[in-house]
Every structure is written in C-alpha cells, then in structure tokens.
Amino acid sequence: MTAPPDRFVIGVDSGGSGLRVALGTVDEKRPVSTAVCSEPVRTGPGGIDADHLLTQLLPAVRGLLDRATEGHAGGAEPPAGSPADSSVGLFGIAALAIGAAGMATLGERLRAELPDALAAELGVRRLALAADAVTAYAGALGQRAGAVVAGGTGMIALGTDLSEWRRADGWGHLLGDCGGGAWIGRAGLEAAMRAHDGRRGGSAALLARLVAVFGPATDLPGLLYPRTDRPALLASFAPEVAACAADDPVAAGILREAAAHIAETAAAVCPEAGPEGAGQREVALTGGLFQMGDPLLAPLREELARQVPQAVVVPAAGDPLSGSLRIARALATAGLRLPLHPTLLFVPDRAPSTAAQDATGSGQGRRPGAD
Image 1 (tube, rainbow, N blue to C red):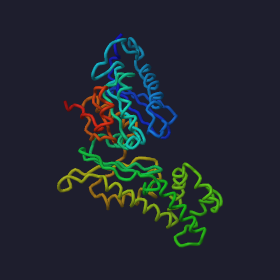
Image 2 (image 1 turned 30 degrees about the horizontal axis):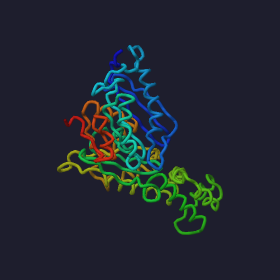
Image 3 (image 1 turned 90 degrees about the horizontal axis):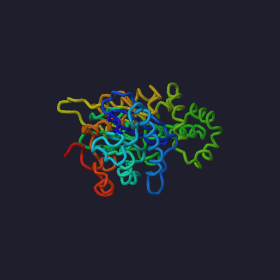
C-alpha cells in the first residue's frame, strides 16, 4: 500500500451554522470537494471544544479522502506502521488550515490539542489555526496587503501590510459592532418607538414596519429582552430600514450614519498607500450586510472615499472556506505571506510533540520555510 499520489490540502470553516470542510490539491489540478456538518462546534467554559470539533472533522475528512482516492491502491488508508512523510503525511495531506469563529478569544484548547491530534489521526505535519476574520481576509484578498470589512449581524474589520495585523471592532452589539446589522436594526426600532411616543427623531414609516413585523409596539420589549439571540433579532429589522430609506429621511439618516461607522472601522485597519500615493490599498466588503444594496452601499462608497482615500473597493474573491483552503495551499508550499499571530493566525512547529508547548507558551511557531 502507498500513500495517495496527490498532495491534498484541507480547509475548514467553523461557525455558528456548523462546520464546512473543503478538500483540494496543492497544484489546484483537481476540483475542490466539500462536506458540511450542520452541528455548530460547542463552546464551553474552557473555550471551543476541541474534542467536539474532531468528532465532526475527522469523519468528514476521511470521507472526502476516500472519494478523492477511489481507484488508487489502498484508498485513504495509511500504510500500517509506516511513519508519515515530513511534508505530506500518511494520507497525502500536505497541509490543513482551520478557521473558526471565536478562535482569537476562545481557541486556547484548539491551539493546545489539535496539532498532536491531527498529526496522530491524519498525519498532518503542517497546520494553521486562524480566526474566522483571517480566513475571511484570505478568501477575499488572498495574500495581498489591504483590508477586509466583514458585515453581518456584527461588524469587524481586519487589515494588514503583510508585517502585522490590525483589527477594529467586532466587540459585540453592546460594546461595538457599529454599523452592523444589529446596530442598524436597533437604531431603526428606536426611531419607531420615538414615533410611537411622539418624540423628536421618530419615523412613522419605521413604526409601521415594526408593527407589521413584530406586532404592537408596546409588546416589543417583552419580545426582545428575554431573548438570548437579541443581536440576530435586532439585525432582522435592518432590511426594513433599508426598504424605507428611499422615502423616509430618518431611515436614510440611519444608513448614512452606519456607513460612516463602517468607513471609520475600515480606516482604522487599512494600511497606508506607498510614497506619493503609489500602490493603492484594496478594501473588500464581505458578508450579508452588504446585500442590502445601494441604500447602504451608496453612502458607504462616499464615506470610504472621504475617510480612506488610499483605498480602492474591490469585490471579495471568495468566502472564509476558500480562504482557509488558500492558507493551506500557501502553507504546503512554504509560501505563507500573511503575518503570523499568537491567536489570529497560529502555525505551530512542524514537530507535533512541541505544538502543545508552543500553544501555551509564546503561542507562535516558526514561519514556514524559515529553517
């Protein structure tokens, strides 16, 4: 039995809707195949549950490998008692990259446990553990300097000049996420309640939409405050604000203020252009928030031009899953140019026995190709 001839790379995206896994090859000659695990990885007092992630990830990876290696002797089964190649591994896996929501603040167990576990189970010798904002960046811009603004229920921006990361916002609906879906929805509901009370700054149009969506305005506090998913409920009203913006100055004003916040967040992370304006920086907008279209995008383009003059707005090339696959390919070829970071983009030493020590010590392995 021999290992599969192809050098596989694996990308993983773990978020609130579940786990997605992509299998590709280093040379990109094979089409990418994917698997979806609909159960979100659990988070407990110790952070993201590494065991729960592995119970979903390992069968998904083995299933993808089995399908990809049909027709090769031995399929995806490793040769018994044979050591893994230092760069490819028993299953032909050249590199694996995992992007996870909460990795930066809740990923300690993943950084401590996954390097050894994945080396033992799959022969993985090159591994990257990234925050989902980093895989969103890699999916949108690849390994170019610039900034990515991810907008959905919340709002976060990440930028780099390829020497260090800069992060702005992403602090949740109580402390930040300014301009995100929950922020817009809350502002719209506040304007509706002002109209209900007869206070200045109210919007009769938004009050009508509140009643149509949620029922009587006086019932809204009892509906909203006990909910554990308050940000999502607030964000569900953001499209109503956008729908009213063409004819309602209060709704339009909310979106202009949101655009100013989003541009301010982008400005905080976007690297400066080169001398005399050379080398404008790309800014990509990604996430469901920007599907609201021109009611938000038109004022946002104006604010970006004013607040981030060095930026040129470009469409996102791909999503966070494609970003994790890009990171895995770069890791496999010692071509990773995105800056390493103890929690945002962690690459342990290739020797699995030292990975856990790195995760609890300095938190950072060597840059691939540095030795």
